[in-house]
Image 1 (cartoon, rainbow, N blue to C red):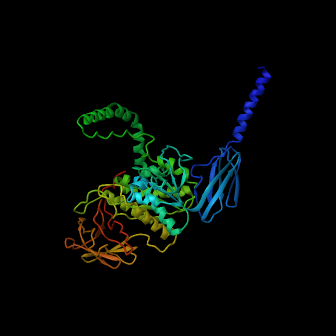
Image 2: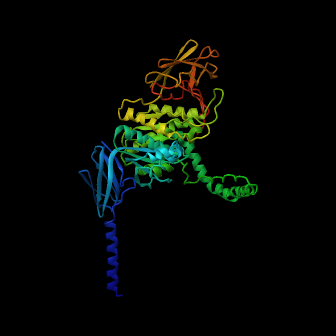
Image 3: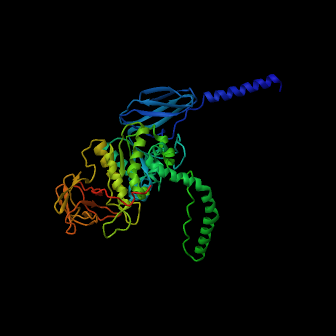
Length: 516
């Protein structure tokens, strides 16, 4: 080949490559796809990637918006609010055209947390019956693939699917029953985005910037820096000592006809789902441009040993999400921990009670809500199978506070305490027609203490919207607790048959106060 021919060929290659860059295909994130639900009545966003400077036009429901991709190839358009309904078709046109169909407009909720949010419909009570009846084509399900990242990502793995007996078995039971109740009561399409991972702590779902901004979390971050620094040595020990020892024990158990011991987990590394911000980066950050009505959250078990820290960590996570979504104080509803573990005969301290208290205190932040499930747990199973009531109780708060429906939002919540001689009177809100026990029996679950701060079980009598608490062992009471235990015996309900939240009137130092 002569010099001119070489020069021509080189120019042709450059032109082809340049044309490829200029005419790069338009791409969309996974959450924007066929069968999705867009949030009604507010501005929504469609975004994606293309060649730098490429003009993108989005069309849906008589709306048309154009924008040019920025120098990094990112683009985003805002769509004027749409009313509930559908199905709609959307086209996204640039160098290529993407057509999305069967799009609905309705209510969109992000559903997150640890294993009790992740727990699937196929694992709940009456699973076979629930799955067979799950024919709700206007409820759309999106499950975010499990992934971690040390830095914020731009996309997730997943796709939208209409709710059916074929698609619901592996979907979050809490999210499904929440969405089903909303759909039945509101009569509009509902989109549910499940982004949850079993056994994970709240700090993993919070951005690094939010954690670093608060000195309270410095010990937590420092501990993880040390874990990562120690990882090479820990991994060598695991490979050279721990695993061989386990293999030997497993072989011996097999030879003796016994069950082999469980293989030890490897040491945590940079990709751990427990590492601060790792799940926010991979499973929340890619979603924050998608318009939503609100979020539901079922988590706390993994933070119970650091319940006092959770008082600050949980609100920090909520505020972090809200800032990043840019939709103001959107509704954030959460499930208070269920009763669990062995029941103790006498009043005692409890990390799980302190975690429930941290959750309850979060109600002081605007537009938050709580579903109490202290009555439907299982002493031997950290995963209660009755997710139907969990989802419904979350939906009740949403229906009342978010949608303005005349339904009870919650069971009784602690209001205040007044001391009347040798008795203490507890005042409640959210009694909905008065306090009661389910079968009319005596109230259980109350403990009372005097200046010695020693709690004893108390007699409790309902008087209207109050409970009068007393004990002959405490002539001058100063504090009352209710359902303050890992697995308390308690039976106070509202007139709407919703359980009272555990609480304490005192602020005495708890067992997790120094846990960081």
